[in-house]
Amino acid sequence: MTVRRLTPPDAPAYRAARLAALQADPAAFLTTAHEFAALGEEALAARLAPDAAGVTLGAFVDGQLLGLLTLVRETAPPLAHRVNVYGVSVAPGARGQGLGAALVRAGVALARSWAGVTSLHLAVMDTQDAARRLYERCGFRVWGIQPDAVRRDGRVHAEHWLVLEC
Image (cartoon, rainbow, N blue to C red; front, side, top):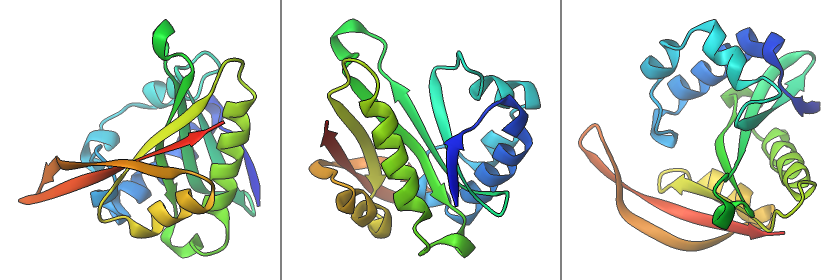
């Protein structure tokens, strides 16, 4: 397994991996597969550019992109000490092999290398117990639960908010 930052040439693999994640587990994400599929190749490549607002890491096994994690640092000066973790996924057939933990550890290490970062933040839907347990094993702690956070397909979901202090 290799974890590395994705770059614009990775856009086709990124599209396939992200779309597969959104289709496999739609309740875990705010973005729908339909919304993501509508993005063009240029928009996806821009997300992976060196000057993009976020950094997306990919976990590869035998050259296949099977896991994703995106870090976005807050830009407003009063919040610039915070990094948000978004879009974490591992292909269903690759779960249980340590890819998720490797992605989270790599993301934490990268964020800690950025000057002035003191904490990482993320939210997990109440339906995603395995993901929450993974984050907790990697040192994150739940600091609150937002009830009535997301309404989708007639269901009401809460979000667990987690933090890791660096």
